[in-house]
Length: 125
Image (cartoon, rainbow, N blue to C red; front, side, top):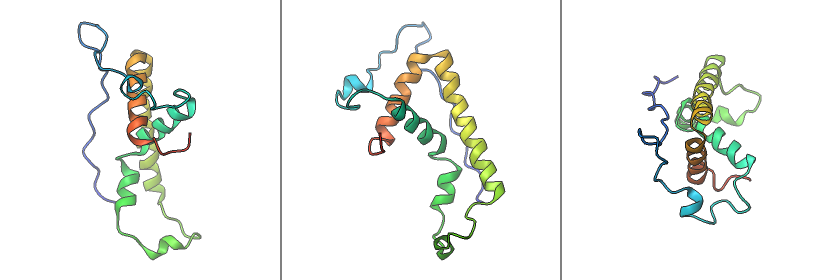
């Protein structure tokens, strides 16, 4: 397994220090057709999964060289140690978002919609 990447900066709320509402417009304000029918639980789930796994150890595994062994579905592709790293990383990243959701729900909503719009638009809704 390759060396670990440098840690990403923690997720921070966008609310200014004075407590005033963030001046950032929402994705829906910028792109009225961003979520036809509204932002759904599936949209939120897609964004959470993308947040948990994107730019982490799973992409490190995926970015390595192709092997013909991948064609043999009877062989394991991920070691127990790699799986542990994948799951722990995903849990840490989801914890960041859940803490934001609890402490700054408006910032969470804005960030999760923005993440979905950037990375999950072509996913099944």
